[in-house]
Length: 378
Image 1 (cartoon, rainbow, N blue to C red):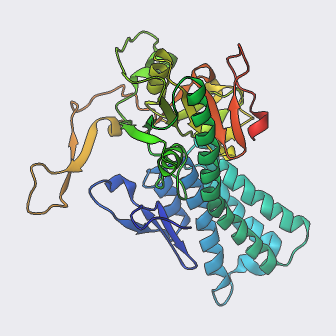
Image 2 (image 1 turned 45 degrees about the vertical axis):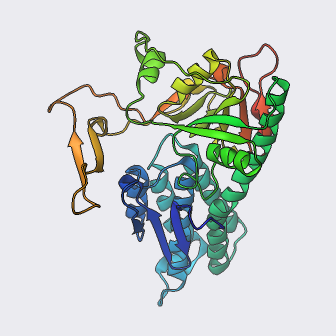
């Protein structure tokens, strides 16, 4: 995986070591934490030490690869390496356990199913256990290695399509302004990024003027509450920009069959504002994020985070102290507050989305339709 030396990586992986960047401590502290057990891998995903749908899928897969590599190098060999059947019996519950760490991000489930299928193929082919183990290691490493290439292809396809669309709308396509929501760069993927990858591509090709990054969890829950729960709040918002040279681009944790998209809280806000001001709203996500088994956004499981997360702020002490790394966690709500609403994601309906970009192509809605046909990009 090739990265700029100035780019933070969500994880570091070698033949005998797996580390993650503890994103709970960012931006003030950069600390890598070693992952040595399935419990540590599960906790890193569930507690959001590592986040981003592609990144958590990569971590889970790479833990499996590390576990198997260490097992192959252990003497005497663990009992589960006695046969392909015992290998499957050992690995299957580990895959199932890792899958439970985050319910909304479909990439994790896709990665675990991919490894299940590789195991099943080895058992069906009656492979010797050494070959089956190495096949599974390669499959797990491919989950991560393929991600960077997918991201770059998405960025290219989306960037080229976008530049052409802007030209058709009367803009020159030379310098674009892009607003994005949540973390979609190297910390959310195996490298380069999804929506941020698109922004990077525009910068690298000389088409980016400014990129705007909006704050998200846990303070942008109003739009989800309005759209899906109470439908009574009215939240005044305004975004002023040149509609001929501005776009909104976001990633996704799950895209339903009709194009409805679950992403970090705050995405729906941006989609509504983009529609109000006639700004293209683009979802950039790998094929593994598209879930054709889910017909629409109402069927996407929405993860709710611990209520306390909506009551606290973590940050560096200000004004500065002698210890410039000192941090504090402050509760800003009354003690004993109940009824706290803290979903991690909101759902943007397909009708508000201009295009969905994957590594297989760009999908747009047919004239007069409110939903997508995603068959051409999955």
